[in-house]
Amino acid sequence: AVTDTAGLSATCTVNITVQDITPPSAVCQTTTLNLDASGMATLNPGDVDNGSSDNCGIASMSVSPNLFTCVEIGSQ
Image (cartoon, one colour):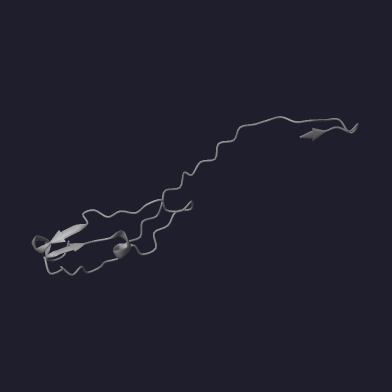
């Protein structure tokens, strides 16, 4: 709004677009999975997350691959 010395004022409308242009930061940690009695293990995002963040919040996390069997024994 703008007002002159006589007290008269006027306003205008403007459209503003707000954007998030900062990508999230993925921070990972090493972990060890133990196979269950059937020889399988599932890796969840929380198992390897070490403080990942985003300025607008994290909508989802995933990890791939996330299913391991006896075939994958050792470092991956």
